[in-house]
Image 1: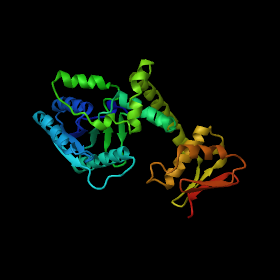
Image 2: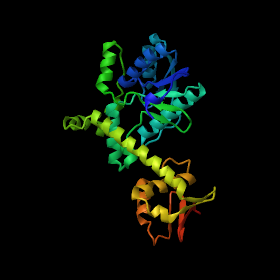
Image 3: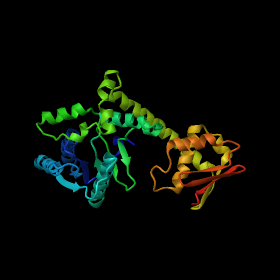
Length: 316
């Protein structure tokens, strides 16, 4: 789904995440113009992660900058004990949880975030470094429907960071620089610092964006075909077990087997976003041949008898 597929004609309110950085500030400003033309109320949300002494004051500064624009602004604070490791990942999870809760409470269907072309490039490179598969190579999608029903919008994915800053400069609007964005303790920052070199070699955000779109289109086709195949494979399904046609499963290419196995594991572990690592699912898919008897993965038991593969919860 693209942004062009969304009908905003009945939308009464929309939210935007505003950290105070140049990207999110530009998004808030441009959205402010758009909502006035379309009769929509804009809610700006700033999350104070409480990780630096100055974070509370920075959140209040964002409110001061946005106040003349007539934008409703809310500061949400991440409270409680902070983790000692993977702090950026934890902060991101807390940020989206707080913003999602606010949007659901206010009956706001759309939350806009300011990820841009360089962010997309950074995300794909980061995932590549972690050994991602085809889905990860697609990067961030412009439209993403979350599990709670909230729709996340990223209208700036084709736009460069510099263009966003130029927008603010032309309108004489300030922004706040977060020092953590330059802290090379974090892997994402180290990857970000290589982007200029890669751009000089021709790997620009524009080309990454084109690659992302092509991969996304390919994934949509693969998923369409795999979902049809998945339904045909199932011989029996209930809450305790799923039986599938093993002979038909074996006839699929390795990518097809891998995706089918991932779907089967998700049936029994729906609460886990990553119930099993991609490498482990691929390894199981490669093991599946005529001599395969069974195995366990992602909390699931796989057992083959003749031409039927049965999947059930792993007994502990």
